[in-house]
Image (spheres, rainbow, N blue to C red):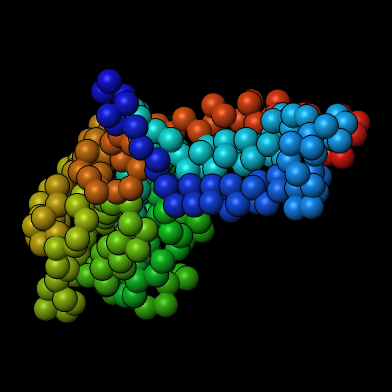
Length: 304
């Protein structure tokens, strides 16, 4: 009874196809009635004795079968449903926009081989932990540039990150505000939630560049500094972004901590496809439609 009460069609507008189906079937049935024109001139009681082999009109005919196929197809496309099921995307990891600082300071070798190379290694570890999840990349120095929008192909993200160097950046500086804003716009345009991961070693003097404002998506800051240096030099950036500050470690602990936060805070509760959705049962009619369609392969069926 509960299933019957929940029964509905996901796309009920397709049921309007039943109207032309019935109209065409009725029109075809009238045209196929050979005795109809004789009833106008011959008494019906006498006509039935004059006709041979047409005492009773068959109901199983090509026209009737075509109507049945049309009705079943309309019901199937309309999407009958009466129970819910978990969405296959409910457990999908949210996208992440990586904001990578590509400045001369990132070539410092205190994080062997350099801070920038270590950032690439950490990015590779992150992509491995979040295999199948979408990751995008923004590079910044004195200006901000979208390198790649979120994509599940981690090898492409890593290859493009390997090609980045301070020499190819148009201007020196620290446009962290523009980089975070750019990453935030890309995530907003995707409409699937997500988080921002800032990978930087330092920030410029607030007097020299505008301080970034809190983005619309949660952010995490990974401090690309050796363990003997205090990561609190990036604390001001983390506070302005309302972000967690993660210090770089020799092992994978820093990447694992960042990945847990990104997966936990980047989900959008109102994203279409999350949670549960109605399980459509229209596909169960497909075998029946196929069996009925087989009759059209019989010799002489259409002209029957």
